[in-house]
Length: 131
Image (cartoon, rainbow, N blue to C red; front, side):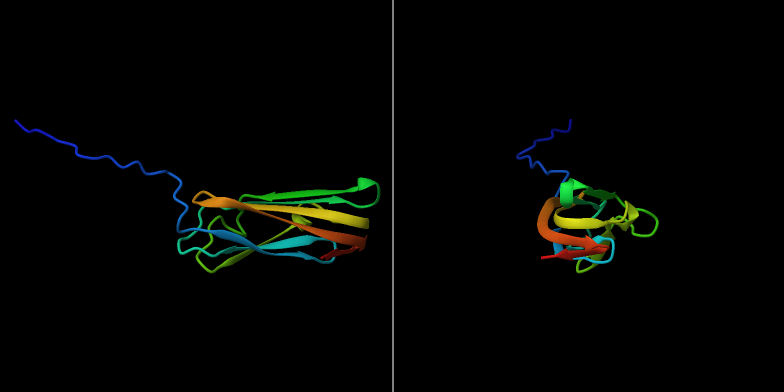
């Protein structure tokens, strides 16, 4: 007869985040767009990265562009430690108008906590300026 004795149990979360950390390292304006840089500042590859950029405002609140990325053939879904991934609103539409804007950004990965950032800016025709 075999007797199995369990002396202790350890519960491990399916979402281990202690070694993977994302950072939104920049929010930039430009010609017709807002772009962001997402950096993996952890020591483990970030898996299944998703990000979103929301740009709202302008005179009469006519600027409303939202871009969400969960990986495609050209940008991938992983980010190795120290690497930077750039996303832009151009895939969702151009930004054109006049007035102040608010930019809200999120980045998340399967094995990293969500990070958020916000910025204020101004649109003058085709140019987006971020403060």
